[in-house]
Image 1 (cartoon, rainbow, N blue to C red):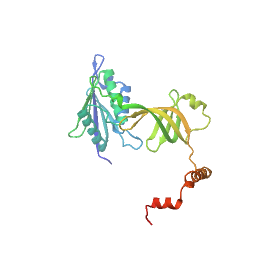
Image 2 (image 1 turned 60 degrees about the vertical axis):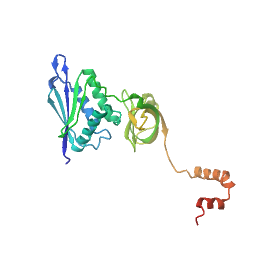
Image 3 (image 1 turned 45 degrees about the horizontal axis):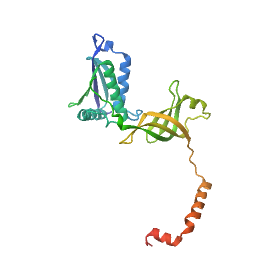
Image 4 (image 1 turned 30 degrees about the horizontal axis):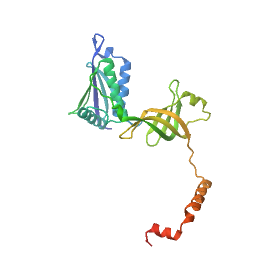
Amino acid sequence: MDKLGQIEIRITGNRGNLELHPDNYDIREVIAILTNVENLLYPSEKKERPIISYKLEEGSVKHLFKTSLQYIIGFNAIIGQINQVHNIDFLDISTATAIENIQNISIKQNYAFSLRTSLEQTNEFYIDKTTKYFRTAALWVDADLYFYGKITNAGGKDKANIHLFIEELGTVRIQTPISFLEQYDENLLYKTFGVHAIGKQHSETGEIDTSSLKFIELIDYRPKYDENYLSGLRMKAKKSWLGMINTENWLSEVRGGYD
């Protein structure tokens, strides 16, 4: 079993005239922190991640998360780098979004956050209503994107989407109009398609913000070996450029005089 380490997120503030305390800390706020911490520690595919155990303590409110020490060390390095550069543009999307969410909670509720680890020489990272930990908007631009993969889920009651499994990215969700899913006759599940979408892309790294993807059109993607098509291409090539050259001389040039 992996050695374990711990992340501590301490929140100070007030609930009306009362100091913040586990007894007046709402369960929705607990859920928000749980979701964001998972993205802080494991920004990529989460199916194979180690277990994260959790405990809530007083002081004013203290969230304690215990998981593999390897990821605690990585998180400590991240908050140390944020303290040095005072921005989050260098982070991958999930981690940056989690920090932005905590920043928004801080501004909305007038809470102060302190994030640290159980390492002996831990870095400590502070967020309150005066800090501005948001990504630089200019770095993210609208992009026209094409994805190819297998649809593993489609639908939704209010906000419909399709889940597309892509070898390079894993499973991505693409916001899709309900009207398209209603009028599409065939069963989409577990079939391979191309999807034309729009979304945000980092102008420097090329990273795609998969949370921003919106559906444009479905592309029927059925690659197959077509002998007639390939024969036609060979005939076109033979009539155009192969017919105008001396094959012996051309082959000699390709070889470069090497026998």
